[in-house]
Image (tube, rainbow, N blue to C red; front, side, top):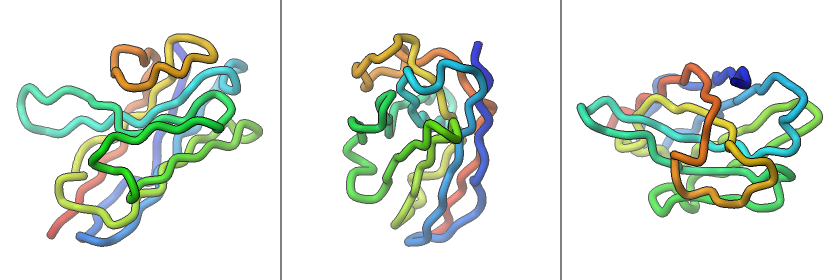
Length: 128
């Protein structure tokens, strides 16, 4: 397991912006994709992949619901991945987890099952 620590969540209103931070420990950060996978609070909801940055930051993935509103970036020197969340909506409310891909240099981003090590999550709440 690779330690990941999220921060930056909080309470926002519709249309507001938040920036999430994911700091990753360990020496392998620069060779693995990092993703953000929120999980809502309703029973049975699973974590879904909303955004991923490839190991070198040159490829990114966004699910349809956040395209044009969220921007992922990473600083390998600081071992940090950022998620800039703009034009927030109440349906963005969830605990946001960052996670490291299980395979080095992989670009298979779309499934939550491709991600192994997880942080403790940071709560994002958007009110209307």
